Amino acid sequence: MPKTDWTSIEDILSGDHIGKIINVRGWIYRTRSSGNIVFMTLRDVTGVLQATVKRGNLPDSEFEDAVKALIESSVQITGSVKEDKRAPGGYELQVTNLRVVNFAEPFPITKDQSPEFLLDQRHLWIRSRKLTSVLKVRSTVVGAIHSFFREQGFYEFDAPILQPNQCEGGSTLFEVKYYEDKTYLSQSWQLYAEAGIFALEKIYNMGPTFRAEKSKTSRHLSEFWMAEMEAAWMDLSDATALAKEEVRYILAKVLEKNKKDLEVLGQDISKLEKIVTTEFPTITYTDALHILKEKEGMDIEWGKDLRTLEEDNLMKHFSTPIVVTNYPVQIMAFYKPKDEKDPKTALCFDMLAPEGYGEIIGGSQRSTDIAAMTERLEQMGECVQNYQWYFDLRRFGSVPHSGYGLGVERLVAWICKAENIKDTIPFPRTLLRFRP
Image 1 (cartoon, helix red, strand yellow):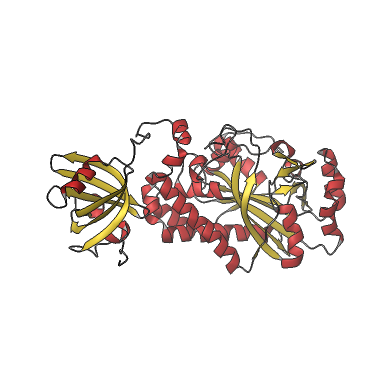
Image 2 (cartoon, one colour):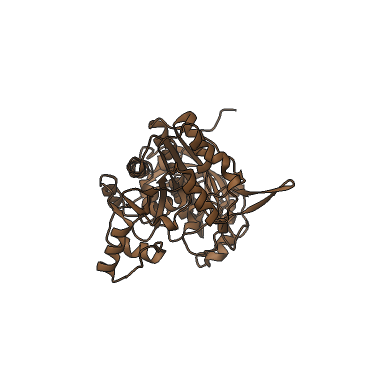
């Protein structure tokens, strides 16, 4: 039996098949019938297409199947392509054969549903055009991250997900029973990456990250994906320059491959195109406080971390992502060194996205001062002995080095103009949700 040639909806909408008989397969996105005609909208991963099923143009049994088939029924259709400006995409398929692969039951999701209901039905809602477009953009973002670092000469380096030490903060650790001991789900690959650079010099990783965030905001997930890099011989300015280049590279790849998806999501493509060719500003934490005071009337005490409110107000004055450096050393993690030129600040940075999307990258130069790190760990109540292996990296040929982590979901949220970070990952995990 000859193999059937299937044509994608995107290919049909290119206009190269007018008057031709083609085969298409997908799912019924919308359907309505009137007497001897059924109007269907089909979907596949590439787009949507109108199909017109008329009694007499195909066997009666197939027409009756078309009448009975509900939305999300899977179908295989043969028909002739016709240009029709009234149809979505400007083309329709006049059906001559129809096979219902699976008759769907009444679909539980309608237009007017609450966000919580849609999360309960995530296994079905994931097929919506909006989420499909977001996930296609996400796939491009992930692929671009890999290609960016490999083009820059980085090696992929894997670290354990079960880790005995904390990296970002004890209050957000997920504790896991490990045989007769206890361990934690990874907050970051960083401590292990710092070992890897003495072998491979420039490394990166893409992996899941777990933080027991108590926040219920639209920006936080308990399980998310982080793209991290670490490099020997790199200082803070090198790291910030690389981070800027990476974001512009990723954005350019999305614009190359996902313009139709961005249109579905209502994103302003021309705005993103401008950002790709624009230099991202760099300011200090102290500069940020001055901007907030002078332009927003917000008098923030020096030494306080920037909350979502402050970040949002700061970013009103920028149309591209920005880098904020030199946060107060007292509120930074133990491995972030003080800046000798300004000892009350750390050699660290965050990259903030415009339009209220907040931090998308965080990084720093890494401390090589064992005494200073020991003091910070003791202040935190940590068992310093557990970090002796990490301090060994400073005892045997240490060099200046830096790294950062990019939050995949936060970057995707900004690019896709998502209202909630839960819409940037297939199955979100939050403070209140770990199903389905």
